[in-house]
Length: 123
Image 1 (cartoon, rainbow, N blue to C red):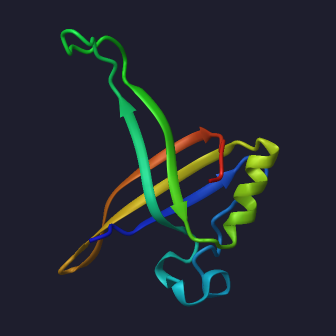
Image 2 (cartoon, rainbow, N blue to C red):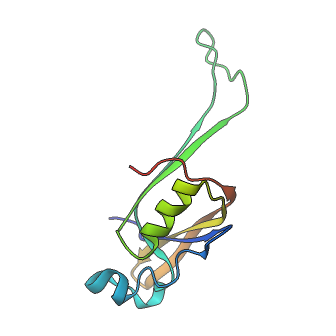
């Protein structure tokens, strides 16, 4: 079962990029009234690599956090994210919120907050 996830973005120049992103005028029937000012995340990937000695398998250095990749629906925030990439705008804050659907309803499971990040690719 998929875990619902949402994102809020604040750019250094454009400010709030997620305002109205999940509203009916942005994504139509996919809209979520509880998350109107958040971006719907369809997939999320984050890698952490631990360098290891090939002979012993023991760690040889500090953990390396690689880039975060996410997939989202095309919405009001899409042109703003593309503009940030094109101009090198820094994202002041990005907050990913992940939820767990239980028999009692949807509950926040955890979130990941990033400060001062730069988008480097749109795939």
